[in-house]
Length: 177
Image (cartoon, rainbow, N blue to C red; front, side, top):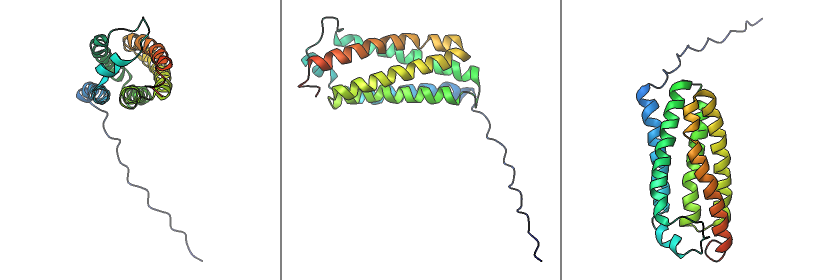
């Protein structure tokens, strides 16, 4: 008769400490800056390309986009910092995942539209981006009201950008396939 030996219990490893206040400040700022830089790389020739497009009468001049996006990125980073601080870790994971996903969709739009001239894909991406921002606003707002409200101007601008993407794509089939 053989005796079954019981496996040794796995050594208990303590959970890693939660990210500290410096990480809660730096991580959202670095992620937001990375998205801005990646989108900016795709937009290197955006001024010339935008000027060559048949634009609707309500399209803003090209010089408006840089200052608007700068303010929006600042608001996004502050929003994520406030949310993460209020939610704590690991509760902030879901909201921060949404934040990272919307940043990725945000950066991708510039590549689709300005670098690769793919109007349909850019429009699909901006619709996805809009949905991710709505979800991000909702999650942030439930934890920290100001964090949610700071994303509302971003949502408004992306709503406008979605309409503009559609209109420009429809008016420029030769340039935006």
